[in-house]
Structure formats: structure tokens, C-alpha cells
Image (cartoon, rainbow, N blue to C red; front, side, top):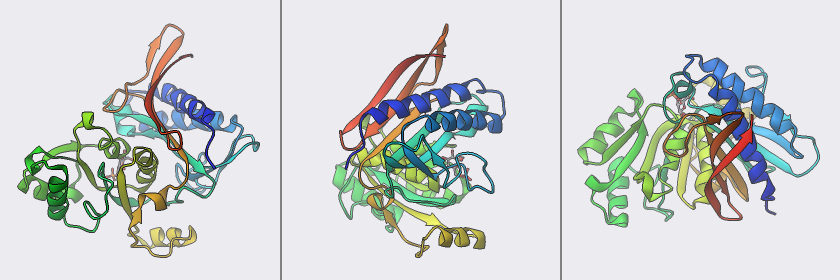
Length: 313
Ligand code: VTB
């Protein structure tokens, strides 16, 4: 089964309108308000689609998030059944502080084809090399860089690694520096970071490190359409995390997941720019219209493009 292509346009409109809603709060130093605007818009628009949707990656669980919580059913209850992953505002700090890279993101797959992940950290790795045993989450940084360098026939000093700039990555960053690999350090927004391996124009060869699990699942959907490699391992640290994981049916808490264990079958991914960033430009308002740019992918039709829309406000 494949997902009808019409949903690409419908979902791009959903993320565009969520991005517009959030764009009014850009630079207002209020992360919560900027997020809420995107959440409210996304929820009401998803509810108007003829789908039987269910949130598998959302704003948290029912007890902590009143809207777009994991398990929430969305749509008119007519039409195909979808698993839905949302990050209505990826990069809340970017939006609050008017910095580049805030996105509104959705991914969908056919029912039971998206990994149901609790909100925890995830150790991740992505590259455009989709060959087994070149880059692997279980290898050392040194081995991954050496393999990647051999495979791409590029010296380590000509490779670039993207990683969240966090104290927890001190050792990885030190090792990359020792290997003379160029760094692209990002302060937030690791959906976008993981996607920088998809095209040569971004000049990123490998994305690695620990970021949000939900962001990992979202990125995996787009990386699948680009035929890139992705592996992730959820990190369940607290007893509460472990309990939640158990409730969600995760038995092996240390398991390394391959991309197609996270997203399988057909999928659609849409990421609209709120502020301009590496992937897409932010919302622009012209008179009573707004212009949005959305990175869209649809696996079965091999669609990967930036969709520019001009819509009435
Ligand atoms: C990343 C990033 C997000 O969280 O997943 C990061 O993509 C990981 O958490 O934009 P820490 O900030 O705790 O390192 C965000 O920064 C915010 O959700």
C-alpha cells in the first residue's frame, strides 16, 4: 500500500499554517506561546483532514500535554489510517530569540509503521552512505570517520560532522577535532541537523550524538525518502523512563534500531520554515498573503523537494 500523494499538499498546508501561527511570536522571548500557537493550529487543521490519524510522536503524554499527545486521535475518522509524528515547533529557542532554523514538522506513515517512542533522549547517527558496516552506532568515532573517509575517498580534514553543541558531547567533539574533522555545531534543532547529510550542498558528511528521541523518529522518515542511513538507540535513564518504555511495548531498552525499524512502508515528511535556516526559508508576509517554504518528501513517489506556497492569511 502507498499513501495518496494528495496528502503531501494537505500536510504541507498544515505545517505552513502552523509555521505562520508561530511566526507571529518570533523574537518575543516566549517559547511556550510560540509552541502553543503552532500546536493549536496544527491540531485544528489535522482534525479537518479525511484521515483516521493517531499521534505516535507528539507533545508528550496525555497527563502532561493537553493537545497532540501520544495516542490522540485526529482527523474526520474517514479515510486512511495513519500514524502521525509531530514537532509543531522544532527549535523553540530559535523562534523565541528570532534565530535561524525554527521549523514546523510532521511525518506520517501508514498505521503501525512509525515507531511509538516515549519522550527520551536518543543516540543517533546519520550519513548519506547507505551501505552496511561503513558507519555504525556501535563503532568508535575513530572507526566511523576512518571508514567514511575510505568510502567517500575524502581525507578526514575534508569531512564535516554535525553535532549538537552540548557538554555531553565533549568527548566526541574532542575526538573529531583530533581527527581533524570539520565541525558544524548546532545549538538546537537536530531534526534539521540530521537532514544535512541528505544533499551535497549542505556539506555535512555525518550527523551524530545524543538528541531528542522524537526528533530522531521524524528525521528518520525524511532520511528514508533520501535513501540515507540512520540508526538510533533510545536512552532510558530514569526509572520513570524505563516504566514508560515498558508500557509502550519496548522490551529491549538498549536496542539499536535501524531506520526501517523506526519507519517502514510509505511515508510523508513536511518541514516548514518559521525562521530561515539551512533547509528552508522562513515565513514571509506580503499584504494579505503569506509565503512558506516546506521541505517535503514522499517515499513511494520518490518526491524530495522544497515546496513554496503562497496562501491567504
Ligand atoms: C534536540 C533539539 C531540540 O532538544 O533534540 C535537543 O533538536 C535535545 O535536548 O530542538 P537538550 O536540549 O536537552 O540537549 C531541543 O533543543 C529542544 O527540544
